[in-house]
Image 1 (cartoon, one colour):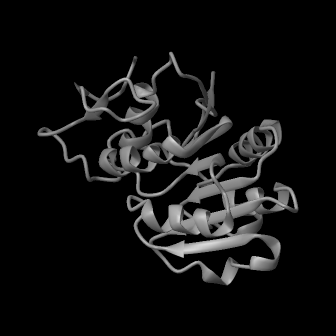
Image 2 (tube, helix red, strand yellow):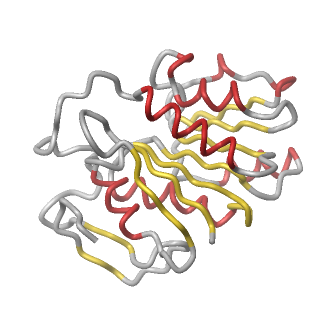
Length: 210
């Protein structure tokens, strides 16, 4: 592990993580971004990020359920949401959860559902999945609040990841939560790889079950 942060490791049982990371008490585990490692980035979700996400989705077999945490943070065509909606199978379900109202995207006839709320509360997502008869998440994209605590909470959806499932996570170059959670992923259970690590890019990672 070559983290840019001084990380403490706790033995809390979080499925898929070898340890629970923390920066406290020197830094708050509820802070999205500290700023000192910032490099100007011309586009939040770069064209390279878009292609990595698209490719990861297309390479995941039989995707029946997509869960996106952090919905349409950029204009739809170049956003992660746009990539996922354009490339999902017609019979696949998309569930997007965001602290803001994204209901303008919802279209049940196309299998598109949105939930407004804190993604750390998994119960509304699981209740919707139960109503739709979905047992597992096949593709999980994490791009919400980037604090350590929130990213650990968002990672917990992996407990419902299907055996063939994929996780993609944005902002794994600098933001504390994605950086620390990526490092903490248990490599006995998952293969993981960072992309877009060079140049002015926030970075994106892809994690797959072994």
